[in-house]
Length: 216
Image (tube, rainbow, N blue to C red; front, side, top):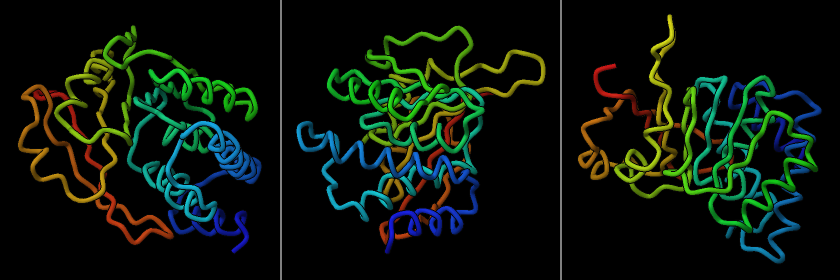
């Protein structure tokens, strides 16, 4: 299938909205990953059709379940899910946190080449990052352990002390339902909801674990 058609069909199946111009930029983003993959190991997935489903559509599937306008993608790697989210929601501010210098260099190049004015890159470990306002959503696709995610990134969630403001959420993109990890959650955070996602072109299971501050 033509990549543009595959992308448009996938977006329609997800029920999200992405402008035609930003769909073009999503395909340019995939081409940039492929280019850098020849030298740097950004992702183990090499087949363009598989990359579109596993990376772009998988990232866009979270859109109905996350809250802006301040998003942090921690351990961003090649910019997933942060760059697809930033392209789909240009009115949001997306911060990509990546401590691997080569991957952070790729993110800077992607920001420049794709004209991502709503994206900021922080080349630091996530536990060292500080934010005066906090983020509405702190999301990660790379963490294998929920307890570590909470310990290292929980401080980035907005506390919701402003009038009418809700506290931020930690959002973990997972494959199978993480029973054991949920049992090991630190007391500071509790489960808000766990969603089963259907990603066009993927047969593998996808779950979205949404955590919030306990008592808020």
